[in-house]
Image (cartoon, rainbow, N blue to C red; front, side, top):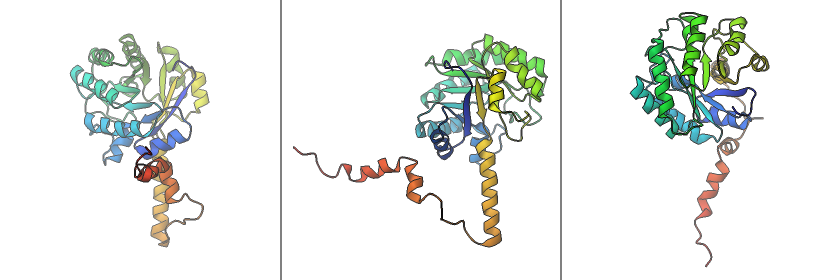
Length: 279
């Protein structure tokens, strides 16, 4: 954040997608809650527990060396639960979390039917999160889902109240048009996050344009998921139609795939310790 400009964080949900993002040269990865939910067999309807989310965050953070921003949903309860949530994500090696002002169980920010907690309750949870962190560089992102519930003015108000209570970045979910999108960083008193969701409520935007608007962090939770859905649907349909599995020509070998996960290092350990050191 101190370097300026827009940080681009593609969404990941497991070790494979995390490693691909890191090896593609991105500086930050974003652990998507929706992707995590679907990877465990559920829609993003607030069905996962804090323990399940932290477990996946641990897998991702140990797989890669770049910072990880993680979804922490509603903080999983009141101020006591929020305190534990911050502690657990920090222990997992996560660099930042975002926490929203929805009633639990929450819903994906790009679905209808969301409900909000009172702003006083949300401000208390933000204060609890700030007090709980042990690493001063651990970033707390305040997400508000008010825009599609109570309107844009309330969303901006809630974002600013969260910033006044110690949040580091504001996340106004689901701007509905380019006018609302451009207004967010102008009207929020602090750094802002943009959530780029394929097939979501917010219009498609080029990240260079988002940077010019003043956004500081871009997360893309559904980019890899939607691509994987399309690719897998296509190859499975082709197999159904032709009975011919994909060709091996021009693709990575098994060993090459493993080497993207430090296969050469692990393979070297097979024999490294068999001979005692020379006296």
